[in-house]
Figure 1 (cartoon, rainbow, N blue to C red):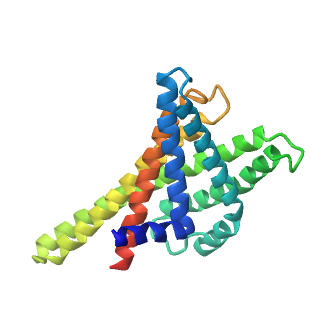
Figure 2: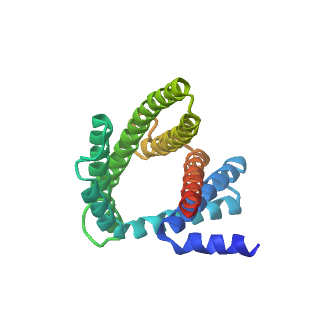
Figure 3: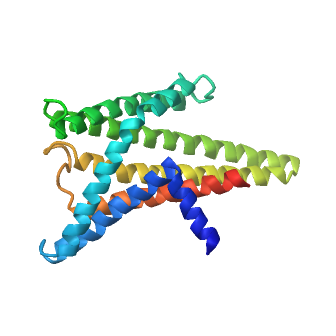
Length: 242
């Protein structure tokens, strides 16, 4: 019990862990609140409260992202043009993702400042631009994951063949590790597609299914993506501690 409590405390003390928890609670509240509101025809006080709670958590994450620009700059600089990346397709997709992510932040900051009446501009176009860059990053991330899956599958086949030819057991272990990496990329695809569906929903009306998702569906897609993120973070932390 004490170990579980300490794990939760450690999770909340890190910025990344706290953001994952807030994100999960935000979309989970929207999912449950949306279901209750739909069942009772918006007359459920609990449903309304959960939707308001979700909106406040979303606003909280927006404010916290005001301080993410420098971290993103540092990451983009460390990756550069991906000179160490062996696959050129993955390399340039990753560079484009970094550019889209970097442009996303100032657009969202301006939209937030406009809504807070700190600057006198209309926030609509800036929210749209932030959604465009977010959606572009998610789409490119999905393409990168598909490319990674194909690359890893080819690598796994070569390892299996080499292990069979040389009668070596380490080929099986390497193949098992590659399968784990493939599963990780599959989770990335599922998470990105769930978030992309929401990004399109928040685009201006008339673009695909923009504005057509009910609250519960937005919450469902976001909760699904958030739980995958939590699972991946816990898995990476466990691997790092081994």
